[in-house]
Length: 340
Image (tube, rainbow, N blue to C red):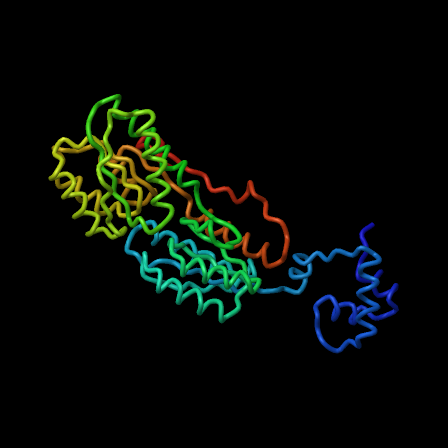
């Protein structure tokens, strides 16, 4: 049988309250007594079940989610999922706070990270931007024993504890494969709409997409990337210019979240409709799939990402293992024929 706190108390000749003070590093225990309890712990091979202890004590986990305030449907959905988690806080023993920062703004993200660090929460989750200052801020937080999780876009060079999001290179490769198959070996040009190349998820999607087009569909030429900042009006203007400058455009890969603008531009030129692959299933992309404006949507489940982030942050705070299979975020492919 596994040793218990009662075994420690018996061997050390102390009360259960004294054992509890030593295990929780609280004051009020003489040095000699503390040494005796620690010796009993080592002798018995006692391993504390911190998660069970926290559950018994009703520990509440203060968590900070730093999210971009960008006006796009996917980020609105991500915010909604965090708010749903806040509503579940009494049963999940969390105290979640949302901090909004401007999208693709490293300086604002660094400032938010430093403020969160000063609060000493149980964990922090953020949508990362590729920037040395952001990386340094994350590393400083992790050095203090506070776990940090990246959402949607990763920062693998940092000390972050976990990434809750899809494999974006695989997502880009999937988009390239779908577009190539839909175009059936036709020769011509395809455009790419990104939010910003400052974020790793957009760069990785482009990397995967480019690799598959080059290897498997060499008749297609990828035009220079247009950035829409994941803002509807900026994206609409970018796609409109793209279609005006290339009247024979065969396809568009929208690898970010500015799809309201993309859809508006497509509606304005129905006679020049290209084959379109986009990301994130929202009310707007769902309608565009049904109407034939978009041909396929690659989706990541924002709710799964937020639930996963909370589970992992609590596990890291407790020092217990993470179940990798449970936290793997899938890439879903939707056509108008299989919409949920």
